[in-house]
Image (cartoon, rainbow, N blue to C red):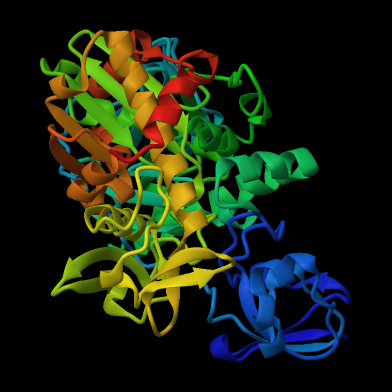
Length: 591
């Protein structure tokens, strides 16, 4: 029987003859970088393999690895295992470093989900009533639906004359009824469903206090780094839709259990869950096919808010817990954007404000008083490190910042470890440095430069810039092109929103940078490359989506404001604009 040995992790297990190495690693919970969902196009799942009973290198591996194949390096997604194999996963092991940005404290207001203690006393013998009616009358819950579990637990009164019950209700439903116990914890869990990272925050609903905040790599990344890869996975095999839902639920459940363990709480005491994500992620969370979003006219199956039970979604909270899913504005502007914009009260501002969440799909909102315009731009995965020669996610060892210091390039890595690649924030810094030093032409081509001749090298017939000598990490001419395409998409989207509003870029008073990427980006570097406007004040707000999800746990009025924005915002579909290509090509040029 073939088997795989991973000495780094002290793991050995048997596999089927001919099994794909990447799939075998993932089955054992060993995540290695793979942005393309195992198609072989990204070249990121590099491992070193010892053993002769494996498939031969193919053309994709020769393209990405070249001479390194002779040293035993392979793409895990292209290797089939037929015998004993030893694998060194260190070149691409996903080391998820917790780079969650702290959210602000949210004020507890009128709660959407409420807890009460009710004394239920049986009526006199000549009274015509029921325990359900008696409890409902005390809670002003007449007319509300009851969960079957609540009726079942209410029956525990049995032969007793009266008993104290704990009751959990929302606007529509008596969700939970049970005899009062010593554990009166009343908890909520807020989620931001990022394409790459899932963020969570456990909240005490009694006080409004945040108990624990944490994040994890979204297990859906095994199907690809971006949502388009996940759509492709569903197209290839419809069963993958349910697998995508399953691994997302596993990621979320792990966070709930870990957060509760940290503060010694029982997950069964989580009675409210709020979830915000992009439109495709929200569809996948419900197990609803998002394929209609992938083709024109990019129509989602649903846009409105959804209120469900945890039991339906296999979430390890109380089975009767309310799950609130944010509404989405369009196929490519999701609930995470609504959550963030409302969380910071941007719809109540008077000045012209630009809200930007930079990612594979750059989402932009322009707030001009009562007029709100938004769009989604296909920036591509370059800012996530995909399609970049030495690109990587923001994990331990990733080059996250670059500057010119004492006449030379200075790099900084996450965790202060030896560099293993460069992530999005480092790429933007490097690009800005190149422009300031005159290393790039307005069209993005490397120029000869005597000062930097020791770092300008040839790679694949084109020039590249060496950021690190050991290990050698460089930025290629093709990498520059990918970054140009990404920044041009966002810049063009911004220009079209301004045109719709009848405003000019210099009138923008403030730029709000949202998301983990926006929190670590150097605003001056982003301005230098044209990613954000030059003159405006810039504020990084961190994980605005998670902050909004937390507010949605604590405020019924907040949810009302989300509905208002949902109704007021005007979505601009860029692909339907005849002028988008003009703005896009203009934005490719570095000014």
